[in-house]
Image 1 (cartoon, rainbow, N blue to C red):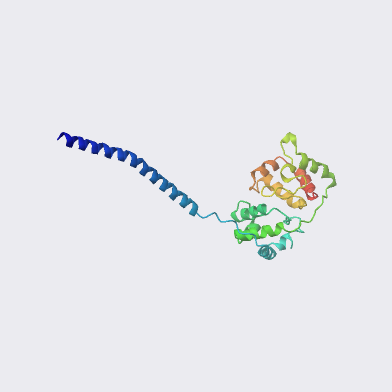
Image 2: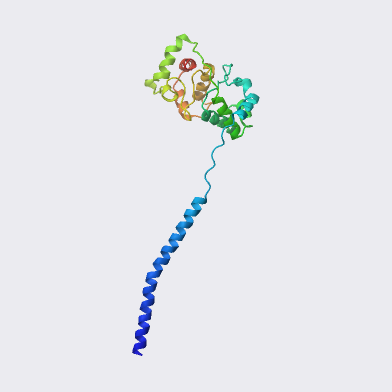
Length: 231
């Protein structure tokens, strides 16, 4: 009986020791298996789709059929109330078209046209316009040139109006994806937009609304006229 008890005790101890050794190994194996499964799942996840490459031929066709009557055959509008679009940054153009379509930028005429465009249509038109050369403009108001230059290049410090050049560049070329090109733009159109920002009829840019709110009619006219002559 004593030998039997010792044998049983020895068997129990052996079982415990074996379990103590193999259970951690089994746990590690399970963790490794789970990690491998996660890695495999991550590797099998498809990469995000890249934006479609702009189709300039389609962009030209759409622009000619839809936009050219107001904005000119090559995006250089001859009507002062309608903006020149040639050589404008594509990201800015796409954002404005999307804003017209969604109602974020309020314009009944443009909403009608933009509502019929898909995201691809907007991209194709915008990149085609960017590829066209903008025609230079010129300032007309001799008495306001100095004031316009002062506001554009230096701002109005006592009213915390920043220099336009700080965002739109010294020559009005703007900054791609961020700030639009302004050089050569019709002064009448620029006056209308700055006045809209100031009076609250154009509400799609908070920063511009804050800046324009500090400008009077004469200052708006002066800086718009000055920008028309930038090149």
